[in-house]
Amino acid sequence: MKNELKILLASPRGFCAGVDRAIEIVNKALNKHGKPVYVRHEIVHNKQVVEDLKKRGAIFVEEISDIKDKTRPVIFSAHGVPKKVPEEAKLKNLFYIDATCPLVSKVHRESEQLYKNGFDIILIGHKNHPEVIGTMGQLPKGSIKLVETMNDVESLDIKDFKKPLAYITQTTLSVDDTAEIIDCLKNKFPIIKGPIKEDICYATTNRQSAVKKIAPECEMIFIIGSRNSSNSARLVEVAKKAGCTNSELIHSDRKLPIEQIKKCKKIGISSGASAPEQLVQNLINEIKENCNVSIEEIIVAEEKVVFKIPKDLN
Image (tube, rainbow, N blue to C red; front, top):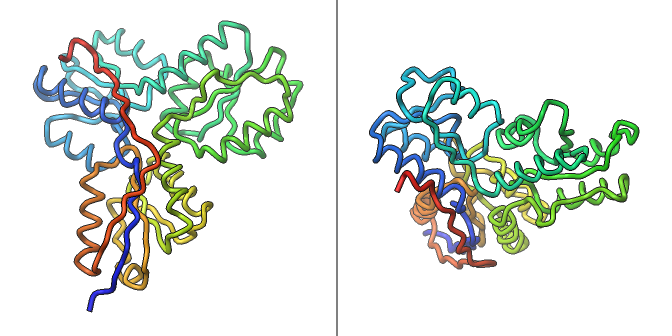
């Protein structure tokens, strides 16, 4: 006999406007220019999305120099790229399309403006994440100091900063962890300048808020997303901090722990901003094969944000 299981489905979840836009750019470029279309780096951090686009004719490369056919378009990923990348593309006479999320581009513009206005800049973010590499690459090397933790802030030497100081952040960080780091920065540098509108994006904030709301009630929480997805990893951390210590990332190589689920009365499900909704439904269907499932969707915000795609793709 199947056990009774309630699933709390966090909402919003899954694709954000920046991810929708980036995928649409690749699809429209394939429709307009035919295949292949090159994409520098994974367009978004999700294996299924990448595999689906490969089947349509997208070729994913890590660097511009890896492009074999220079007559074909190249698309830059949603995470953004250092300035040297479009410069290299121009030198090679490549036709390129920038699918950088507009909210990441906003951080790029902030960094440029701060630099122009004579500020030393601190970036709160994760080392080696493509978005952080792209943001730091907007300015000359050494112009931006990266911090990941409060310990990093404590280690900063005030004497190293000769100009007024400002901070910017990666868009996909933990809201709460970042707030603690910002407080730490403000304690150490009381007149540090922050962004007029915070840099962590609406989708990151909403998905974390939804997970926070369901976590205290759940025995287990599953976040669907890729291992290299920053915002998905943060959702797991948020769920654990909010009271559901048995929370984990479900990626393409991770089997669902059905035997554990069978022992539960209530679990939660959400997905990262680059995970297709179909993966959520597949997960629910797998659970339904083993349990009598009832579902309650917990909605903390309505998202109506849409980003325009480049005009020449319409």
